[in-house]
Image 1: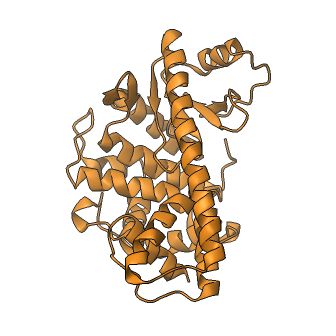
Image 2: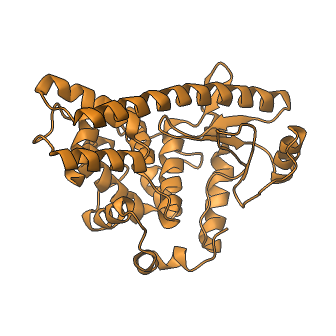
Length: 309
């Protein structure tokens, strides 16, 4: 069933025309549950619609439920986009530079704020919110009841304090790349900067047992747009040097393998040479319904032994 889910995902993003075979009724239900768990219900429904021309249809009751879910998610996404624009404008009014971090599949609003944690707290208090939950990288803004919002005063972070020091220094040098693209006053990172930020975000979510395929779908689109043309960073470093500096070369190689295996990422688009062994481990943990903490500790000991920030 998992392979059929990946095939449907490829159909949805235009990498395949049809599935290798028609799923059985229970397999359709399994694909639907997997799509829900990974935040890809709407995207996979688009894939299912494309299968109609090939005579492949899910059971009618499931199709109706799936369609209703996809429509609800689409409406929710439009509301999220509207609220994100309002939030960025409000931050601009308070003279806080902001950049949109999350991709199309995200169910939340993730904003980088170019200010200190104290300044971010002050902004949140000015909205009338009294109870504030701060972490090392971000705090939650309770602006809307059904829309999670996180303001990030730090974008990159790892638990290992020595590695984190290198990462914070690197980000400080390249912070302006967070504002590399702008449209109507809404800024977002350059594609090359996003290639680093999204990879590191996925790594941290995997280590905390919260990773889903939705982030990798957004990552697939970023890498496809880059088409292997990565801009140098501020110190002149290329992508390979940067991954080594940030200690992410092996993990990146595994993710490249996962993107090729699950979504057919073109080889020209990869950050580095794919590594099958690392990729198989990442994919196993990603698709597991419950993370295997012991396996994660054994595989990533220098990350997992430190307490979460």
